[in-house]
Image (cartoon, rainbow, N blue to C red; front, side, top):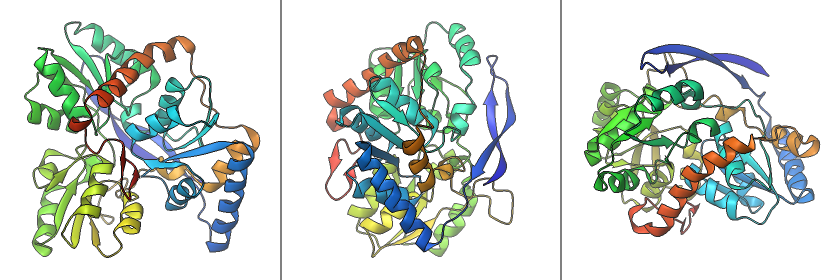
Length: 368
């Protein structure tokens, strides 16, 4: 296990921003025999503990395959929340980053929620400390507080609404129609995209995802010239110069759906490159190109893969089930306060399915 230091953006209550740092641990890679052995052990432990594995599209492909092979779920954060809430298993193993495990616990307080590595965090979560965010909210009491899923339970406890990239646009349109002014956190790129699309009055927290923030508009334009027939797929956490060149802007599930159902043979993908594992499985005849970041020989920090998502490993799944390590525990007062904004989002999605990107289960995609 090695440790790597990463930079991320952090805002304080006054609106001032700085660059902070956090460590990520990199699991040792396994050879083919080791992967098969640990995958079999993980499957056996899931069965023995009547547990279900809920995995994000950005974790290692072996974990995604394990989830699907054992009756679990591979999805974006919206469907991860719904799947964990509705599944009969009393133990959820959440392969992703900490806010995903916390969201599962918020919705399922009676279930045991385990994570392969509780230290797997998120630059957006780190960049929005609950105490400073609370002061920021107190300074703007006239605004409806809308937070992205990529935040801690304590931040969600201060929010009126939680959203994911699948449902942020229709929810903000709904709030705008009610005449609401919005305080948005934490991703500034996603916030600006929503603001541009809806015309809503939005005050933005100044956070960013260290993966998507590295995509570069100029380099993308050069790559497009080399591949003029390629469709460009962009996650809205990316900078405006990248979003402006997109043929499709959307959540991980929306981008996956665009590849599977699209007529083009070639796609440039601007999101975490781990999503390409599922894309290649479901659209094996199509060519996928990573959108350029600052470049491996230049200054890129993540090189299009989240270092904290990379902390999830087969050995971690086995360890958390065998020993009970990595259990998500929330203060009940915080959990109860956070529950309202999450349930409000889920109720909206259920009441307005046509307005939400790829709701429910998509044929051939599974959870969406």
